[in-house]
Length: 275
Ligand code: NAP
Ligand code: COA
View 1 (cartoon, protein in one colour):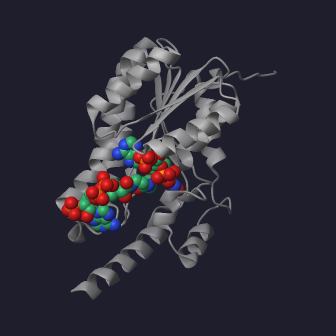
View 2 (tube, protein in one colour; view 1 turned 60 degrees about the vertical axis):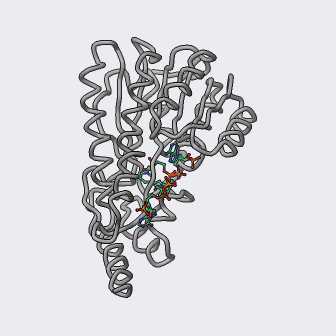
């Protein structure tokens, strides 16, 4: 059997697509000739990404600056994309915020901030994109995290938010399946050269310990996650929906123990030294 994958005519929207893993996803579709749109808060990051997508061979590249916490901004931004690129073949919802902090040391607003970006941001993106999704045919991807199913010390806010993201994925697979829309969560492993990895594995020692816990014995690359999104957008994945897929070198099979305990210890020491 020979399989040819063609993304050239696709309209792809990546929310939170201006850095790290999500930008890698946008660039992967662009390098296959797709029309690609990205959005995030910072207009300079948006402009820089659009320029890069054009240089990589995107059929069309565009961007909008909005905050996923603002439902009206999300709705206006996605409508602007739709006006230029037509119905969305692919929607990736990946905007997120994270910082390590113990529940006892974080303000209610700190917790709420992460829930509003990760969870309510996902709600705003899904609701605003729904009228513009190709029916049948769209592939929707939520970029999730292991915090959705593994507890990590110092991550109660992200754990609560990303668990909600995965349940939205599962529920929408049922609500939207009859219209031919597929939706899946992709859970990146520890991905090298990203803001998430810099925040959660901030020292050489932490990185060394994390590496030792990855059965495939390497950190992930942005392209590893992007390749999964290409697969999910392709006919090869036409019966795949409502699932949560790890792209992690089997890191999460080992649970959260090593990283969680290390982070908890460090945060408790810092909290103790403040008292
Ligand atoms: P990143 O580079 O910080 O990417 C986050 C993106 O979201 C940026 O484009 C950022 O751009 C945008 N963003 C943040 N807050 C926003 C808001 N309120 N409204 C709109 N856009 C917003 O981080 P990353 O490490 O690559 O993480 C990307 C995704 O992968 C996240 O969903 C994260 O949970 C997940 N993940 C990462 C890892 C990892 O190893 N890095 C592991 C597991 C899961 P602006 O600053 O311009 O808004
Ligand atoms: N520890 C404890 N609380 C923190 C914190 C930390 N490291 N960083 C921020 N907060 C608190 C702030 O003090 C504030 O609470 P307060 O009003 O009670 O003081 C609240 O969180 C909101 O902070 P603010 O800086 O106003 O939020 P923001 O909307 O400007 O930025 C963040 C959102 C905090 C999530 C910021 O880190 C961000 O923009 N992240 C995006 C990039 C990212 O996290 N990438 C990794 C993805 S995995």
